[in-house]
Structures are given as structure tokens and as C-alpha cells.
Amino acid sequence: MFNAVRAGVIALFAVGWSWSIAIAAETGTTPDAAERLTADPFDPASAPEAAFIMDAIVRRFSDVEDLRGISGNVRVVLTEPGEPMYLALPDSLPADVVTELRLMQNGVVDLSAPGIAVDSLARAPAQSGVWALTLRHGTDVEEVPDVRVVVQVPASTRRNGDIGKYHIGEWPFEHGRKPPKDIYQTPRGFIEVTPENMTLPISEHFVLADFLTKGQADVWPKYVVMSPRLLDKLELTVAVLEKNGRPVIDVGIISGFRTPW
Image 1 (tube, rainbow, N blue to C red):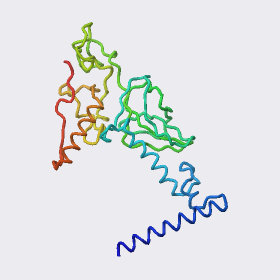
Image 2 (image 1 turned 120 degrees about the vertical axis):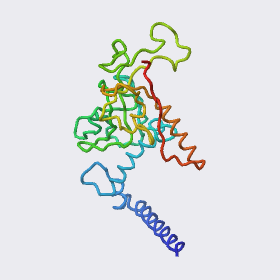
Image 3 (image 1 turned 60 degrees about the horizontal axis):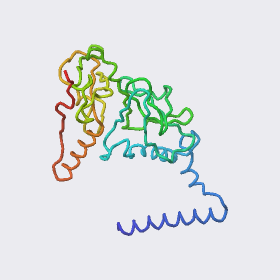
Image 4 (image 1 turned 90 degrees about the vertical axis):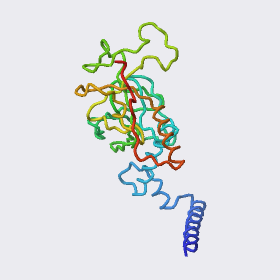
């Protein structure tokens, strides 16, 4: 029965596509069904099917390796204020769809607020914080899920090792000594962590709070250094464990970041 139903469905699709091709070849026009599926998804007058196309466009951002890492599970892109920012945008977006960043407040993005347009060679916003990636057509805006652009607070903001009331300290090679490897250089910036954004998912299994240094419990905001490349490795490790029959039910990070102090 299953095979018979499956054969019937395949035959139905074959007949439908053959009919559409024949009509298009004979009349030079596309059938109404095809037009409904290829309508502008941002146009309020479009048929409901067009929304599925829009969802597919949004999902394409979640499949870009430069945004999500090799594991496909990284959810943050780090940059500095005003720095050139490479976002691997899909090359098949409609010409009238604008990619924008919108600042998140208290862990939520206001889609009605003005956005900052970006492209593959854009510069990061001048304001530090967590930004959401969105798509806009006219007044219609849709958020790209699970992709956050974090504009870090520059390391030059520190005064005597502090940013505000939060004590960070200094790295060993800040005063003329050359580090043995580039990885030991002073970080260029810090992620600002607040009570509102500390639960921000930065990958499939980890949140921003996993990297907080212990101590200074009553001092906010706090600041951390975190590497998307490290997150990618952690997620790949989890994937290998699960592939080898070791389900990862709970996983945590100990001392993901410790300040020099």
C-alpha cells in the first residue's frame, strides 16, 4: 500500500510539472501556481506560499559556514566598533531585500527600530553591544534566527586595568615585550556581559555566562574574552562524542575565561 501511494504521488508530481512545462512552452507564460510560488514574499499581496520562500531565504543565513562555523552550531560573529566586518551573505537575495543589523536591548531585538544596512564589505556599528541580523523589504522586517553580531568593547577602554568598576588587569606582554606567539597578545576587545544578555546562546550548547570569570559578583557589566573558533571546536567535540555513542546530556565550561587579575 505504501509503495502504491508513493508511486501515485510521484506520478502526480510528474504530470503536474509536465503540464506546467508544456503550458509555459506553448504560451510563453507561467501557470498561476508557479507565479504564486515565486511571488515576492515581502509583498503583502503575495500568496501565502511566498512566505515559505522567505523562510528559505532566512534559513540560508543559518547554513553559511562563515557564520556558523564548521560544526554549524556557532551563533556569534565577533568584531570591533567601526572595523571592516565580513558577513558571508547568500548571493541569491532579491535585489530589493536589505540586510541590516539591529541593536538588542535586554536580550530582545526591536524589529520596528531603525537598522544599519550591511553588505559583505560593511563596517561594524560604532556602538558596542549585541546586534541581531535582519532582512527588510520596505517596512517588513524579519529576524535571522541564531545569528548574533557582537561588537566588542575595545581593550583601549581600560584605565589602570579596569573598565568602569570591573577589574580586568593587564596581560604579560602589554609594555613592550614581544609575545612568543600571536595567541598571547593582548585581546583587541572584550564582550560586555550584563544580567540581561548573560544567557545569550553563543552556540548550540553554550551561553555567554559560561565564560564569565568568578568573583566580583556584584559588579556589572562584566567583560569576557571568547573565541568563536574555540566554540566551534567545542561543538565539534560534542558532535564526535555523540556520533560515537556517548550522548551529551549536560555539558559545561570551567574557567572559559579568566582575567589576568
